[in-house]
Length: 110
Length: 118
Image (cartoon, rainbow over all chains, first blue to last red; front, top):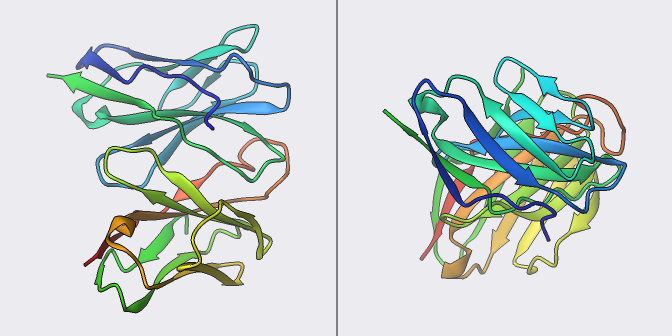
């Protein structure tokens, strides 16, 4: 079973920051938080990951709470091309099993 | 080369046919995965190969038979499928299974093979 909980859908206006929450209250010390997205009928695409520190790359920022029980993916300036299903995954680096939860369907509104 | 290539993109087969899906990567990744995805559902893990050995089989019916001939190739052999097996089949790879560190466990997915069973 997936170890994360995400809202089923969210809307965001184009040009605004999209903040996607993820709850992972049972996360353990060896588990990283990964974010992927899947644009319609394509393969999932890696976005970002982190262990306990906040992370930023050219696509997004990842904010992890101090207790590590939740995180937020931030797309700083959302465009229509960011419309996708976003998956938050918790994974122990020693574990080959990578389970997707239901994800959040993000709609970017023009 | 930073891609996972899946062929064919589309496959239509009858319930008595035997066919195969193929997946190839040239990134030097040592773990490869098969996922099945039905419409509007998340990907479901089917199989994982780690260093060319089958490490995870998620109780998948025997009509699906995976094969990893070498570290770059992953096949999924299909035989006597049912219409409910129609789905998008996704292949993925990751760099170094079981190793901590940035990037070691990031999955790179292919575009998928869309299978229709008549």
